[in-house]
Length: 131
Image (cartoon, rainbow, N blue to C red; front, side, top):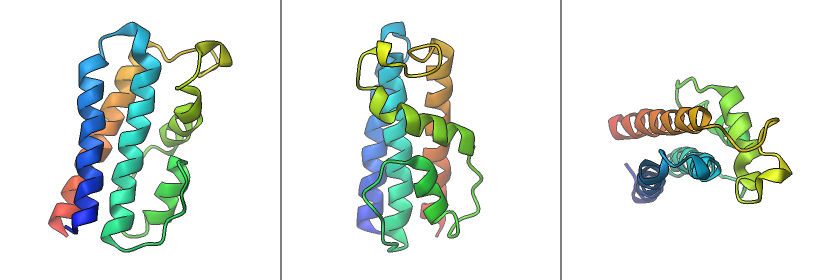
């Protein structure tokens, strides 16, 4: 694996560690959503680096996924990618701005985002290490 791809993955692991520390705090579900997004974004950018694909400076997970999915055969839940992209900016602002139709993510949603981020990290890391 190329050095910069590994750096992206190590940074993504920091987001997972952050989530692990706060996942059980119901007041921080929006922060879990933010770090889940960050983790996934960094994993996808690791693929860009590994394959030397030109990347735009965007944070939209669905766009990033579509721009690299031709180099690997990993199916990702595009609805969740889109949802986390919508939450990306809103997760850093007060909940009255409306993170989801019903406000901040529920604890169950946050845990699902966490599992999703860890799953993507593991799949992409395994893929890049086996290359």
